[in-house]
Length: 166
Image (cartoon, rainbow, N blue to C red):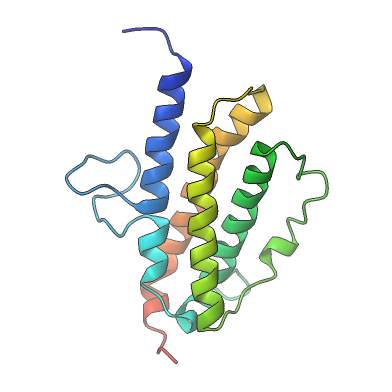
């Protein structure tokens, strides 16, 4: 074994983020998800119509669309931080939950924007730059945050699929 180095850490983070966002690569082992290629955020969200994603499966709790919008918000902040901004001071975390209902166009846009931001985040991790403790902790926390929301979405998935498509 060798000491931990930057490349090992970044490769590990990218492997986990890729699995969470895009799902497991066919024929590859997994670290977090089951081997279903649709188990990542992209594949999970694609299974739903806007009406299904907008349902409040658990009364008084967020819809799947709400979780997706919250994930988009948080990853967008990380990309802004990676670009040199300090987006956290004025971040409206409560506002990230305001989108709960989407029409088909909004649902497609939300999924597209989420994937673009997630892939931009994965790419930014590999760009050579100075990291501080907060940057590294935030990058690692992203994986836990994504896994948490993906788990919440997947727990609602079957019930959401029972919602008639409109």
